[in-house]
Image 1 (tube, helix red, strand yellow):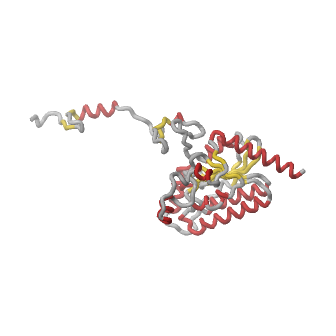
Image 2 (spheres, rainbow, N blue to C red):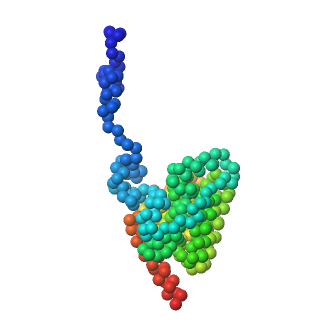
Image 3 (cartoon, rainbow, N blue to C red):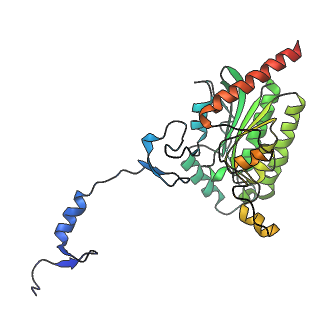
Length: 295
């Protein structure tokens, strides 16, 4: 054995090679930049990101990926028509929850927005409407005091302007860091929607994946018309929690949009590429009937 020669070692395939050769081998390996590929959680396929269109659909199985409010606005509203409301509202820490400010700051950096909902007025096929768009990228769309306040203000704005309102829901439920104050938002938003309904105005809900917890238990299911994207998860408690409570096996897919449609909780499932036209038609019919009623 030559103790003074080049060092060598055994690689995992059992062969020997020098460290120098190994460094050359590593340099020759291709480098793939981050963010070029995404994985579909439905079909498990690895997808080249440029193959995903503005509608955020899996090119392999047509699964609907989660969208940000900006992406939703781009495929829903008439170009340049969206005017955001309550832009500067941001959460505080009403319950003095430890490190809550830090959690919120991370969520803001990750999502690019101040809170888990964006509200505003826009036009869809020329029809004026108020939108509220929840974002699962911000603390899983959890409903805190600012989310409830912004949605309530959007509903009240729509009532004052005599406009329809559309709410795109996605949420993991109430925000635990805000305790009872978070739960209060369920009643507050529902009451505002009640006044909007008494004024004879239209409320459309679009349920997206996932819509769960307190949002489902309140304003998500109060729409005059309830639409859903395909295969969206819709429910209050999780499947394992329910099974553990009732001690019964639940049907496969019982919390998916298709099951909810079959059992009357959803009016129609609409593919994302057709959703803008569907909403435009609903708004046009509503505005026509309202005009006839005023004559």
